[in-house]
Image (cartoon, rainbow, N blue to C red; front, side, top):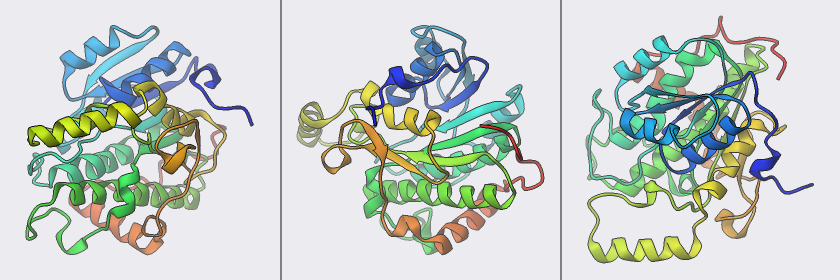
Length: 302
């Protein structure tokens, strides 16, 4: 099988792609490729100034719309204001190991942004989605666990990396449960996931770190990380390749750190269907957004 590169992305003319967090990193790289292939690309970003600056570097039909995944009101406003069908939704935005903070709705920032924000956005847009949902996870999911007794770190001492790993595990559990619900509803829309390996993006530059540790991380990044463009390839693969629902794309190289994209495995915890269903139900309660069972796209050719 030929190696998948950005040149392998087929023409996207007539298709609409929404990408969260597309003003930088792998989101921007994926957006640039899809726009160059003819898609109408919507950059869903928290900072409109940065989003417009990113859009100005791209050829093709690119729009910038405000979306703060840490605020359910912003998510509803974005979904209400978006016109027309959406062929592909790429849930790319995320925060990684920040100092402890809460979203506008009181959720721990990483769980609230990386999982609950995308959970709400996906379900609100789902009646208009015609092809697939791609959710970006991380190798960090392998050390994660879903702590149902304290999802939002209200009782435990906060550990930023553990919170990040929980949110990335939640991304994969969301992917699998979304696929199950889509199939049950008879929809041809699929749910896929991807991870970039070790990509040299802004996520690797968290605030609040000690100087020595930060410099060490920068050195490791320079040695081993992929570029934004290469880190975006698993996302593009999950978005346009002929892959099954609930598939997971990542780099094919050593420890999935870098290399051409391929389908990869996931932890046993990420395959737990009971946990996936429970997490979905709790996410519906927390966000007051539910799976639109009666209005998902059914029988649409992909």
